[in-house]
Length: 392
Image 1: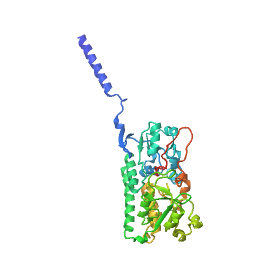
Image 2: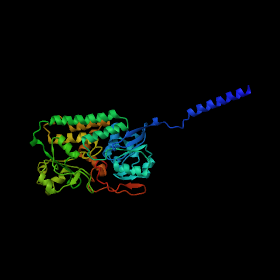
Image 3: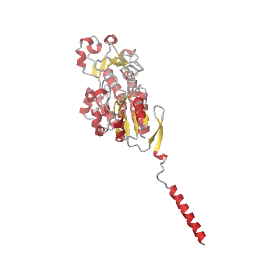
Image 4: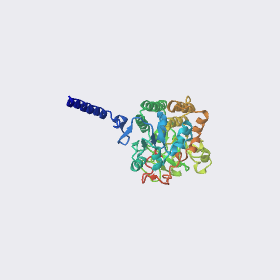
């Protein structure tokens, strides 16, 4: 009888042990994570529950706000905090760490302190983060085409990362519909009515986008021709962003553009400069200051992809766009895509380019190479300056 009782007790204890092993809560489940393939083709494991993300880059920094996930950001680039409009729309952004100064300059200690679950970055910044930390990195496109297709691809990709595909699709549809509207309105435009546009950036006004650039795509969408269409600005150039090149005043006079767009100074600066006097745009008072909102509109941002071509089309072909009020279009875009109501004062500041003066290096700085960083924990990318237009 006693041996039987001992056997029963032993069996019960073994059974209880098996139950205890089966309910061990220290074992981590793979259901807490998911794997994605980023835009560089790498497989990255990220949490299912996204709470803290660092995003590095320039124009792409506005995409979380388009997707409505800005509350998940724990670190940004310094450029994001220099945007007066973005700071007004999202005051929280001013309280976040900003460990990334410019492309390839990252304060690693500050990044680690922000404690992100993963980082979203381009290839230069990604390489630095991967080399100096164990933080997972999700890359967006390394090339700097910045055209409509790439803009939609990046918004769609981040929509998948943050699981907001419907918000990404809403933006892509908005862009598609804008381009469709322009194409239909300008379909029968005679070739001799396609005005020649020169984009003169930087303080010299002699840095421009050439053939095949996203800016040329926008110019053509607006029913115009790019003055610099015979200038190749593809690939890397020392001390200058890809997609851009320095041209001479002699070249510009030979092109004789009908419209000149500048991102620095005022039209009066050019009207009063005798070097520019022979150009048609000067004679006819057709020089315009480029608008700037969350980001200046000569950069490959989701915002400018929609608004820049319709703004230019209204300037170049006022008779064909009499029914289009650019202020209304800007307000509509911000309300539907950013879910933010712009005031009249804010729209006026956008159109005057006033916001560009608060963005610091984001509105210019095309020919100075990379900003140099200092201090403990800073890492600089070597030999890659200028290869990512959208990064800075």
